[in-house]
Length: 141
Image 1 (tube, rainbow, N blue to C red):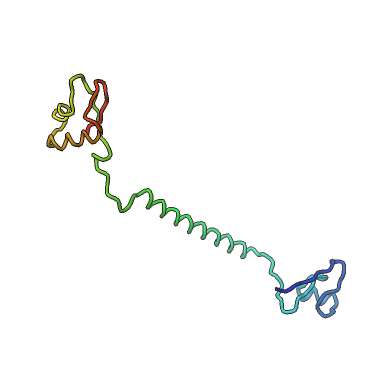
Image 2 (tube, rainbow, N blue to C red):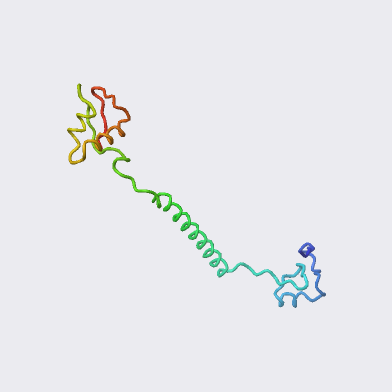
């Protein structure tokens, strides 16, 4: 790290060998500013640099967006897991329990082509208890 001492702009002295002010202006250095030997003057920000910086920021933002999108995709897609089945998700229809109904009578009435034992097991798994009350709404598998 190089320490640079500055002087007020009103003084025309510099750290470089004394030159007339006209030769300093021709060399591209402002008059009255310190000159460090071996150091290149800092370039002014040009339109090209501005465009390059904006393109770099845009590329980084795009990359971060793609990483976030791929992460969200794997979270929402549930990749690698077993697909949900209808019996796990829940029934698509409901039934209002009438007085005198039992799980067995409901299973016999609504089972369709499913074997009675399998339908009864699914119905019991959905309801959670073999006890039914009149007016209760239960899901059917």
